[in-house]
Image: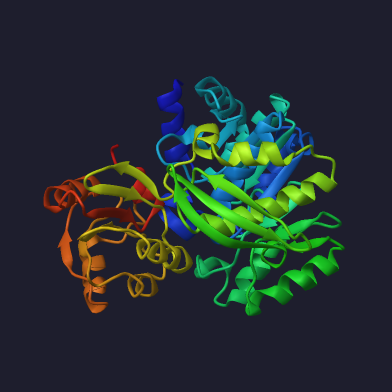
Length: 429
């Protein structure tokens, strides 16, 4: 098979959560364990950092990868889903896995696929593990796909576990309370392995404290140790002044990820770096400063408050759940524009009503849908939005919707595309 045929095989042969939803979710680690045994357990042959959380885990993963790479470490990065190219999921020092490796791995793993009948995500995780082991990375950043306890990535024994935050998402699989969701995310905490939690709320703090205590895992809560005291935009960078517990001076960091919500992710990353230093990783302040200024260039991160057009300004953001959209609307309040146009599409297993209730009624809406089975029909989205006081027309796909928004928008307007990772992925830049 060539590369195109290999991808077609992977996408059609294996159940894919991003396309069909819960039917692709495997509720234990058996398949991943069997796949790893078939590959001689590659995940045991490199060091790793394991990252979970409702929002921010992708940004935190990319920031940490940029820092470790800048420090001179050969750094693997596994994230999901991808926006344009499957190979975005598996990178070393910012470079995507080669098409040749994807082809060769798929041919090698076919007997196990026939025997185990794994999901698409389980195979992509096994592929990442095999690639990182073969390429002898110094460390790999491993982002969970969904949850934590039963996530396919949860076979690693990491240097550090990181949980960014807890919010309402995937309740049909992770639980209908924040405590249950936190319990699933806390499932990545391992015996004796330090864990950094980015931020906690009253409903979740005790879950992390008790789990860490049970596992004898040193726990650090970033929001208790670090605070963002001030911020401003300067030269297309987000400049954040950070105060650290027990220090009188304040340090200023610059991020090339401009969304204001990145301030919380920054604090999580700084705490993670502090813990890694205690474990022997050489991460100087200078390296951290430099790496944070070039996360996008170093790692290839896209879709986080990403500007793709000016006059009018067009922003792409993958926010898709209640907590993410709250952060998005807070960002909108800081922007200067004449009129707001929102191109939106969502998947059908999200808390649609809660998300729509957060969006501004004054915006012009363009309702559309991604080309996946999970996508909520644009007409249904329009109907639900109308109940929340949001008005607009429907469009067959995101690029048609965006074209119409650009035709109407004035040069000093703002056009935002959001609601689904898969919608943003289909925008033709």
